[in-house]
Length: 344
Image (cartoon, rainbow, N blue to C red):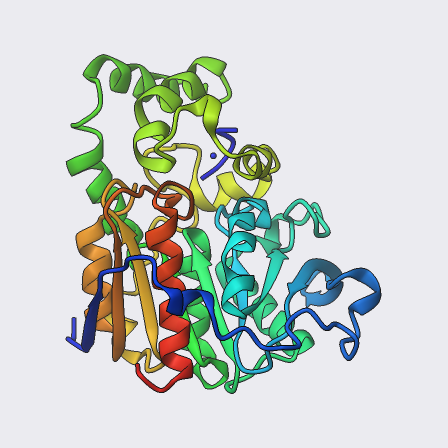
């Protein structure tokens, strides 16, 4: 996502979701009582200091709700996007009584944006998440880590390094291998595009003209509205448009690469398919039929971890929290409720 406005079998449960009363109940009586929390004065907002090899900076977080048993930290995509496009969570998680945290990673819009290219490395981002976890007081008794797109990469890496702190893991719209993602784009997504438009997109990329308005015009018409968010561009929700306009290209391009049809940056060789078997915590993998990511691969990921469930969004794309919203959030909430109730 970006400036568009952007093998060991485990236990698998396939989750078919329809709206239920269960996903809209069990809200703690004190869910909106912030009186005992230190961030009460600021409405849940905290700027958390993060130590890096280039000094200490601050990252922005905002808590919503109060539930000592179920607390979810949201990792946005990009890299270099913002929490803003995840504001759709505000329409669903409070009614389910889940405490959650919006969070802009270092370099993203609401957080400090140091001009330090050496900081844009996956291991450093993992250590940042760990520092944020400690500051927020999240632990094995309550900590659900959610990652969407690039945030899914970050969540997988965190789960592999710091499994002892997690209660549950959600990997949304992200494959476990960038080479496999690139292969899916070449094999499935690009052949389905208008051939003339694809050729023009490829030529603009070869010419280094990805900032040309024509490049984004072509991608919006032939790619984004089919695989990123399946709505007419003029109807895209305001948080998505606002969030995409705030993506930091100084992070996105070095890590993801300049192309919108595959990854070629620092993440190009990232692959954790052989390591998913190490993940022991209850894990929900969310995929969508029309995603930029391969839904078959994401379904497989749920079998590769030790305790996995796959949630399929049949009408969704990469931003399934918008274009298959009810299925998406019913499945996400049910996962948390099942872990809480010991049913997972």
